[in-house]
Image 1 (cartoon, one colour):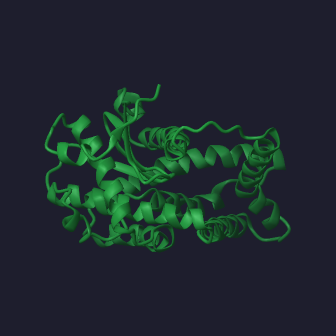
Image 2: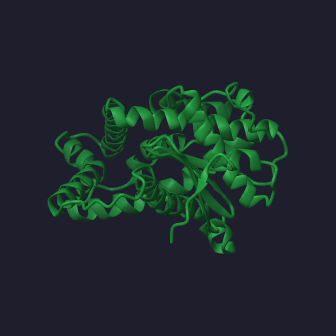
Amino acid sequence: MSDIDISYGGQAVIGGVLIQSPTGWSLGIRDRSNNLQRYYQERVPLIKRSKFWGAPLIRGLAALIDSVYVGVKAITLSEKIYSEFEEYEESLLSKILSYTALIGILVLMIAGPRVLVEQIQYSQISTGLLEGVLRGIIVIIYIYLIGKTKDAQELFEYHGAEHMTIAAYEDMKSLDFNDVKKYPKEHIRCGTSFLFLIVFVSLLTLPFIPNLNLFLTAITRILHVGLVAMISYEILKFNFKNSSSLIAKFFASPGIWTQKITTKVPSNEQIEVAILAMANCISNSEQTNKFETILGNAKEVNHG
């Protein structure tokens, strides 16, 4: 890897790619009329705002909060940009059904496995391990089923393009199209790896959480997710800094394997969008004009 001063991350969004840096985040979108659009917003992540949020373990919780906050905001804006800001009103029934489905998934993930394993009279360690395995199975099945939809297929292709573009810049400081195409669609710092690490660490720690009533079980599981996110983030940082070590490869391999599901080989047009998002973020974060040609091919979105 090249000596890069700024670390970049990202995710796929509606019609394009989100790229984040320590100073802000960028969107590259191909709207439904096939026009390229770009957007940038300054934002210092929690982990950079104070020593508290940047402290070991705490920074994992900060990263999780930032990821959810920016991710939801970026997806909402990307949908508007993709639809060219045409007004639409989501029905009240649709909102109710969406929130009900979200709550249902959370309950299933947090309390569901515990309710199931309590029907089996095993030791606390055995039930904890079984609960962790059930969580992992639920996550894999959920990702697999979501991946079967047409919209998810396009999202997974943009996900692959995001990884390839970040890897090319980190390794070569290049956003040349032919350079980007040389890189794999999987990336060691992917959020999918973070998610799988959370499941894996849960598997190791759940056996030590006592059996309680349903209400207290839900509370302890929510607190447990925060603790596991902290530990998982430290493992992810270790993996990236020591990617050639056997320990790092062991912890990284399940996440890389899962990315075989959550990333697909992107088209040339999708790689172009990812390059646009990356160039837009770099230009603002590193205060450089070396990607003016790339940025000139897209319309800048001004959105309050």
